[in-house]
Structure formats: structure tokens, C-alpha cells
Amino acid sequence: PAHRLLRAAVDRAMGKDQDVVERASAWLAGEAAGDVAYTDRLRMLAAESQLALDKPVEALALAEARSATSKSEPDALALAARIAAALADSDAARAAQVFEQTLRATSTEDPLFRSRLVAWLRCALRVPDAAAQVLAEVRQHAALFDAADCPEKLRAEYRQLTAEKRSP
Image 1 (cartoon, rainbow, N blue to C red):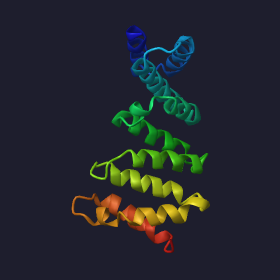
Image 2: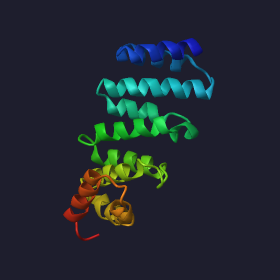
Image 3: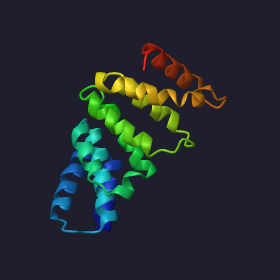
């Protein structure tokens, strides 16, 4: 298994994403109960490759198949955010769910929290059934965007998005 992970990681680094997907699929299908850490890492590499191949739905399926503890790791959250961004045009509702899960797993003290909050809002505003609720929740964090350490670009985007829909 360790050599398989190494092989997949090297192939991924070399841009051989189709090879990674094919091998990982075969290896995961051949595994019985297997080592959870091994299968989680293999799924992560395969998901990254699927995303690189412009297949966000397949990438999401692999990412969601990982164990609960590994889904909250920083690299898994970053991957989930990239998958959600790739899904946003084709399935805004599903992308908003993934952005929300990513946000909920991120501490408010994390420097990425504000950008994930804005990404969730940007996507959720395109989903009529979710827009008002998300907007109301996001507005509860307005002070984060007034803070001195908030990047101006992020502050401006937050203000623009929250101004577009005045009523919660």
C-alpha cells in the first residue's frame, strides 16, 4: 500500500491524472476493509486527479467517501472548496452544500474562514431556496469584514454580495 500511495502521488505530481484515477479505482475496488488512512489518502489523490480532469462530480464522490476525521483536515477542506468552486456553474445547490460543509469545519479564527464564508454566500445567492437563509447567517459575521486585518478585496466583495439582497 505504501508503494501504491507513492506511485499515485508521483503520477499526480507529474500530471498523469488519468493514470492516477485508473490505478486508484482498481486499488480501491480490490481493497476489502483495508487501512482507513491508506484508502483516505488514495481517495484524496484520486479526487484531486478527477478535479484536474474537470470532473468535479466524480471528485466529490471520492472526497465524500473518505472517513469523517480525514474530511476535516486542512488539505481535505481546501480540496472540497476547490470542488465546490468547480461545481458552482453546473450545480449551484450542491456546490453551496459543499461550501457550507467546508465553512462549518473551519474555525472562525482561521484566516480562511472569511473567504469560505464569501464563497458560500456567492454560490448560495444563485440558489433561490437557500439565498435568504444564507444571507441572514452570513450577516451575523459582518464584524469579521469590518476588522482591520480583513483584506480590502474580500471586504468589498462581502459588501457587494450582501448589498445585492437587502432583505433577509
